[in-house]
Length: 88
Image (cartoon, rainbow, N blue to C red; front, side):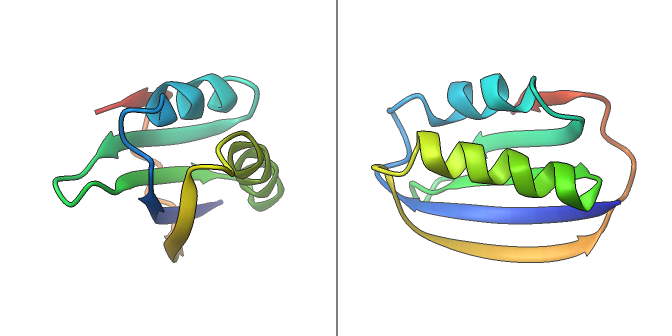
């Protein structure tokens, strides 16, 4: 199990980014959350098996490619504390 904490920058607020992230997450065995940040970025915390997280992120990046300008990614051990995936 791994955890990625990602900040997405660009035109990522007000374009359905959080809704799309939750929709994409439903198709994968991942947990975590997505939320808007005061600096106009979007924070995503996602946990799951490495391959599952990788495929989830590939699809999310594909769906939101026109809005993401850059990302800051931190990988850490999974906490296992999330139940499901949601918007905060």
